Structure formats: C-alpha cells, structure tokens
Length: 77
Image (cartoon, rainbow, N blue to C red; front, side, top):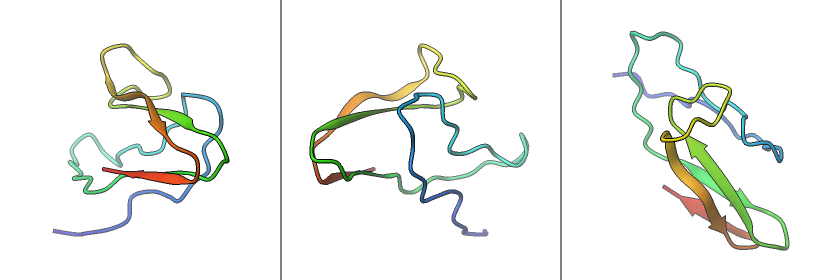
C-alpha cells in the first residue's frame, strides 16, 4: 500500500464545478481518509461536494449539498 497526498490545499472559487481530484486510471482505487474544508471569511459559507460528477454537478451524486460552515471555522470528515 502506498500512502500519498492526493490533492491540495487549494482555494476554491464561487463555482460549484471545480474538480479537486481525478484518479490517474479507472483501474486504480483510492481511499480518501480525510476531507478538510476551511471557511476563512467573516460570515457563514456553504459548500457542495459530488462524487463521480466530473466537471459538473449531477443530481443524485451529492455527498454534501449546501453544507454550512460557520465563519472562521472548519469542517472535517
């Protein structure tokens, strides 16, 4: 087993279609052990995360949808 950092850190934009991870091959299975979302702003913010919706936000693929992160806080999964 090889453990490596897959992506990040990255500052995301206001769009909901930013790909943050694309596997190297369809034959490779990756285990994601942590997702860390930080809201550095002075007001609450929401985020959405989709699984398998490359370059888009297909209905039915949501992991989190408009999940609230309070101001100056973080969400860890």
